[in-house]
Image: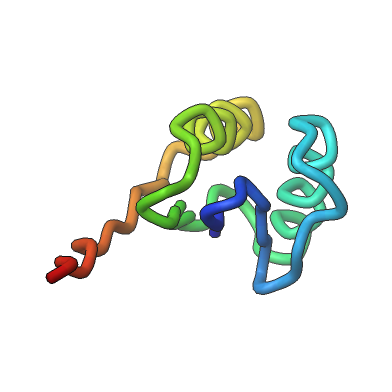
Length: 79
């Protein structure tokens, strides 16, 4: 999950900071528990920085993940 402030969460736990190398370590540790190429869903708040999403996708690729997708939700309309 990537929140509106660009904070990353892996398995529901906030990653220490938003540096790519920290996210890489967090995702790598999570993968160790799951085996070979598990499905990954990247979900981001509608107001998340685009670069944060690209960084997560890049790291997934660097970790050899080929089975990942993006989860989207329609923003609520403001009156």
